[in-house]
Length: 70
Image 1 (tube, helix red, strand yellow):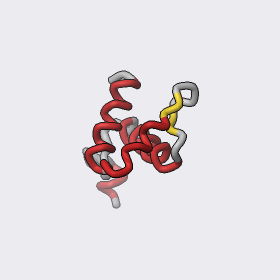
Image 2 (spheres, rainbow, N blue to C red):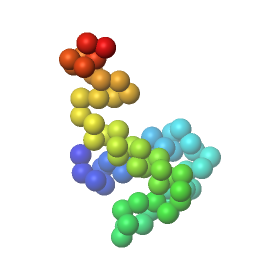
Image 3 (cartoon, rainbow, N blue to C red):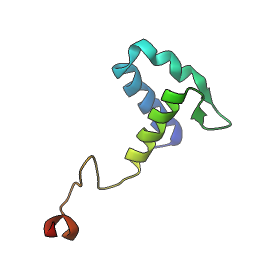
Image 4 (cartoon, rainbow, N blue to C red):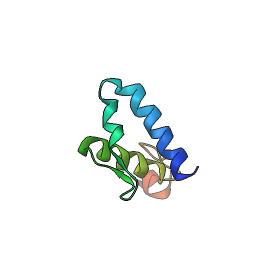
């Protein structure tokens, strides 16, 4: 997924859940590659972080040795 496709997916999800404040998404800054609104920026960063943890969601997708020994 390209950066633009990822951002578009984020914006669709954000608008679906937070339609009343979706105007925050109008604060995108191309130079900074971030939103200028604090909450939109925070949500975007959380979206990016979750997408970069391959093999994990909120909990690990597969049990590893550390989990099994716990």
